[in-house]
Image (cartoon, rainbow, N blue to C red; front, side):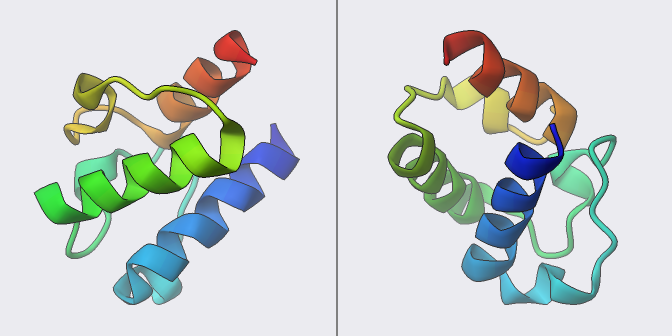
Length: 78
């Protein structure tokens, strides 16, 4: 999970520079990330789909999900 988490963490910081100083953990809920909003969710979805070649359901990125949920979804579809 570590390599996948690091890739996702790097993607979040690239999309949302305000998250650079925020301590992201697998247990972090998306809506806990500073300045997370619907536009960030769209950009994050695009990042995930391009980086991992998976189709991400919109409801996974609505903020109620944790980074662990995202990682587990990607692992299941891999």
